[in-house]
Image 1 (tube, rainbow, N blue to C red):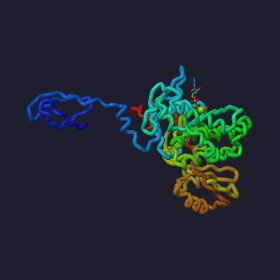
Image 2: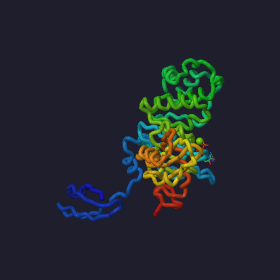
Image 3: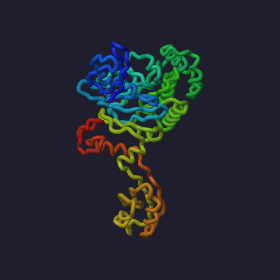
Length: 377
Ligand SMILES: Nc1ncnc2c1ncn2[C@@H]1O[C@H](COP(=O)(O)OP(=O)(O)OP(=O)(O)O)[C@@H](O)[C@H]1O
Ligand SMILES: [Mg+2]
């Protein structure tokens, strides 16, 4: 129900009316008895949407779809990236990550759907909105015969930013010692750092990084991870895509998982574990396998699943009952050499989500309408 104040066209008396969007009502002015008709405006989706975008959302993706000929690269993808968070955009090869990212950046025109950046609609020609984002493309390449200084100066010109920022950015990324070396001599990791440097020009409040660690060795992956944290600690929102699950788990506040163009989940890793009922595991090292009956362990309160291997027992259990379970296992006469706990990982989440790929997001088995909001059950 909408409240509205209207003015009588004859006596200018203010009349308060109530109605629903699209409803037509007859009004009689209580002062001069003039009759009139008022139609409440239908819902203005674009305006409502803007109102809905609260101040704490940096990137709002609304029902984005992209079809290339017959390939549905993204299908009604919707998610929010909150201001100040590190948001992981996870999916296997060909899932639609780059396509979605390019639509967020206004580089690819969506078949349907909208993107809002800090509450403002992104269009391919909306330069002001684009300035709010620093983008590291999936396969960045630079002119090999230029130095980092020359490269960044060039990007400053493109972005209309004063070149005086270049030395500081190079220092922040630890590239000051190679500032005048030709980019052609750089390793892949150094190229990625230069990619970060070009994204930082203009001090954007949001960074969108497409597979920033792809193809790097563990040492360089750590360097990149540290830089992502650094940008975030300086106050920026960071969204990055990856198919490296451990990378996402190490960095992200929340994740969104995409597969075959469809959003499979958006949540914290902890909540996803809870929703999918993924349990922590106790890995218990034992001396003798022979004497052990899995039934005895399964009967212990809080134990969900038991696997007995050569010198260890793996117990999926209730996270709150781990210590009690260890005590109870000792009580049934099992000699424990050592034990460790493995908390659920994003790998577990990913496998479970893709296993249940015919289930809609409301948990209805074999529902084909997996896209959020489409399931009518
Ligand atoms: N320009 C294009 N023309 C036709 N098909 C395309 C185009 N770009 C992407 N696709 C297709 O859309 C699907 C999603 O591709 P996309 O590059 O978005 O996936 P991705 O998740 O980024 O994969 P990767 O992890 O390998 O980078 C794929 O099937 C891909 O072949
Ligand atoms: Mg990609």
